[in-house]
Length: 333
Ligand code: CP3
Image (cartoon, rainbow, N blue to C red; front, top):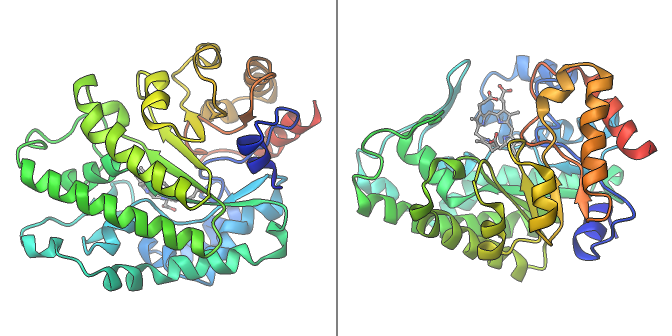
């Protein structure tokens, strides 16, 4: 059994696996070299030669316990026919819904558009280097994708003023998302993804009264579907105020925490495996500070099934030597 599955399914606490969100990315010179020659990010995500290579770059360099497929949560809106561009400095930009017929999608069109993603997963999972490691597939949670599809740019701190104005449009997109996220998960699993992570990056934008409709209910539906495929599912509801309630409502196999929450509180409140939490900025300082930060998590989770990870993605300005040091420190002591 792979280390992540052992931790998740057997609740084995004797070994704490490690992987990092955005472990393949701009902090690696070998990624920047490919990126420089491939200016169109969406096209890069659809390149079934380069995606396996990029996915495995951090696995070749470091002793990680899992790979995560190099792709993006916004490939689902792209598959649904929404225009998608990544402009340097601006983040993602999506097209509008002037024409509502654009919301009528054919399943076969969606699968065809995202076929290269599935081919990349298959190729990557067949690589010998992953024999004893997991390959993590992922999706954005329905709420976070709704945010991007309606807001059309990253919301940073606030949603556009009229975000909730067109209730019909929101409900319509939400149900389309639920249906197509299941398809996207099914095809990732069928092609070799052994764990699924659900990223809800904007869960923290909602007030308590809206969580049931936009976060708990739709996410639970996706979680239950993934479990029905016999694949463990990790949820990352970033900046949500009440992780305990999220776990009770959604019941994932693992809860991934951000760096704003006190790990001591989590270990007291939550009885399922936990992942992450370490501040990505800890990798930007010096080795001693990083060691102190990691020690804190080691101590708090010593008797709890725990997967080492950050509280958000690796920052582009991170020195790869610090990642190396982090892994060594996690594994040596
Ligand atoms: O974790 C991994 O290594 C797997 C690959 C992955 C990417 N994006 C690659 C990527 C994953 C899991 C994601 C998830 C994702 N994408 C999220 C959820 C996690 C989070 O960050 O909250 C979100 C919100 C997105 C949407 C997205 N994609 C944004 C806002 C941006 C622009 C910000 C930026 O860093 O430039 C992206 C682009 C993106 N996705 C990059 C990478 C490596 C950077 C592209 C580049 O090289 O310029």
